[in-house]
Image (cartoon, rainbow, N blue to C red; front, top):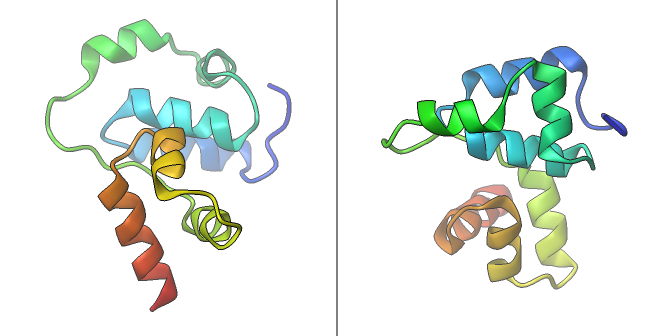
Length: 102
């Protein structure tokens, strides 16, 4: 893994453990840690393919870095681009921004 700037190893494990959609969470953690999903899987001792099979069909809870999303919006990054980066809907990003500006 290149670097884990935002989180300690324990925080990464906790964020992964608490997520409902493990596959999306691995991708988000990889993006936040500036590494590849396979690096996160390796760190956690997982295989993304096995997690895809376990993935629930219900709505998933995932961690979104609200402050980073707000900064991106303030910098002029389109909501659609941010939503695509994190693999969530545009309305999720809009709601996150609204909650941060209250």
